[in-house]
View 1 (cartoon, rainbow, N blue to C red):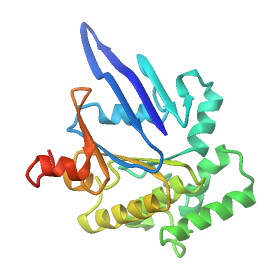
View 2: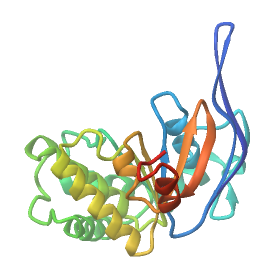
View 3: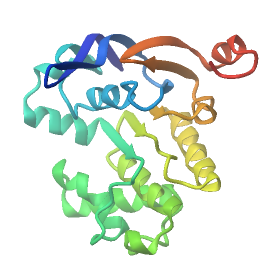
Length: 236
């Protein structure tokens, strides 16, 4: 599903060169549930942006479902993001003036679905995350956990193959965070590929594979059981 080859992302800050990604290579298979873990500034969010076609590398290649995204036009990238990828963000990224169903419909508009199709797909997605009775509520009328479920519904609405979640529990209380992770596990069980970015080891342990990144480089990559055993019961 995802293949990255020798990827670099280098920022120039005056005379200083910052290597956000420093020769990263990885493969993620279809139907995997992968956590990319690292502290702030490790490069994990930069890597997520590359996978999601939200940024371009300084050098290296990224393939999504066999397609090299660096060779795509802007229109092709937009179509890829709108139909094959679903995004979940820490801060929800909901538009405050739109209600829940309108927020979920928004990316479907850009993907070219008709008004009837959009409404049906958005309604189905909101019902899927348990918000069938909150469709006409605006974000300010919803709790943080409910807003994140709207964000998940938006990610699911176009029935993408790949879900990218950047710190999806970071702004939530522990109860809401548990609910969101349970929902992501259900989505994975239905056959989706999920990549989650987190700095929280307890969140990472709920994935099936953990990739740890530091200073722009992958320092470990193992299934969760092996990663936990190597740390004597603690994730390392």
